[in-house]
Length: 329
Ligand SMILES: [Zn+2]
Image: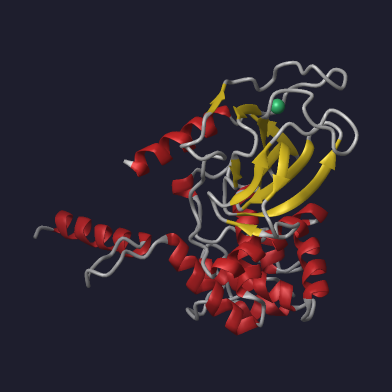
């Protein structure tokens, strides 16, 4: 091999080893999710912070930076510090990576991988630095909640992170991807893109969702890995369910006929799980039914770390429907 091809070979080896596609022993490739899970476990063992909580905080941080970082540029761990926090307030070396002097200046920087450097770009160092900040508030759920608020400065972050943690805990993995169409593909249903249209009842309101017309009692399915965030009556939506997924999306199901047994606020769902049934509830006081043909109103909202806004669910519905159709073949 000449020098150039040797260099290329080294680079390729590095690339494949680092990106987890190395497959020397014909074992399953190590995915970024697997790499993350082992980092969470290792850091949890070092700090006493629950691994699912670390995973949940990291997931939240990844969600709110998703619009900034394209998938291929996303770091393994998304929890970061400012240079100033990392190095310490009065540290004259803003890019200091010496754990001893960082510690002296009260910086958050830590050496997680034991290479003698506290490198904010290193996933193990970044995660340990974050976990130590949580641990500093003391053990117990209430202290952890305060620590999370202190890091993200947002009440809603605490709520979303606790929901993420419940999902990771239940499935004991962070490798949770995939969505489901909200109705069984075998059901008799029909839907059109109606997001943004005017609504007929309750004054001037814009239609923030897609109406899926189906028969009374058609099962309504969870669209994602998520947590039931809301369940109950409202004069517009009737019997409703709100489901929060790991990506910070809020899935809203309205006009239901009823709920799946045992479903309650805090229930963790997987895609395709039955959560309720199509009906025509709403447009009046509690229990009002039949003011319009039975349908599922499905709305989709995204939380970007600052606010929550409605997105058109129609393209997602078509995508999930097609993906399921392909799987069934
Ligand atoms: Zn609707």
